[in-house]
Amino acid sequence: MSRRLRRVRSLIAEFNRDLDVLLSPTVATVAPPLGHLGADVAYEPLLERIAAWMPYTPLANAGGTPSITVPMGFDDETHLPVGAMLSGNFGADALLVQLALELEEARPWDLAVLC
Image (cartoon, rainbow, N blue to C red; front, side, top):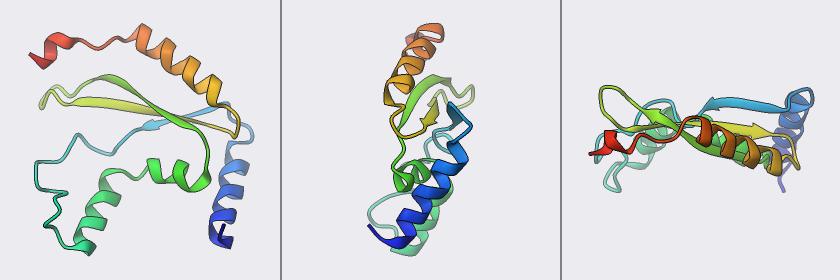
């Protein structure tokens, strides 16, 4: 593991030390239009678009901390799904799954919105 990744892991562990769970959006906006992240988009603009759309998940990936995304409803304008991401400290996997199950039970998907 590179020195930079070890440093990120250390910083995230330090940040999470006094937290049980960190709640964030899964992505910054609803899903972009078709083609916005297409294979025909040049590398640099594509990387910028991806980073702007999903700034939260890479932190958990780089830090190696457990995270889980749960559906929390639909955007009123686009009717696209909206999610929340729960992240925890190392070893908090069971807590995150338990919380996700409770959230999904408390706020089930309204499948009528999809029709």
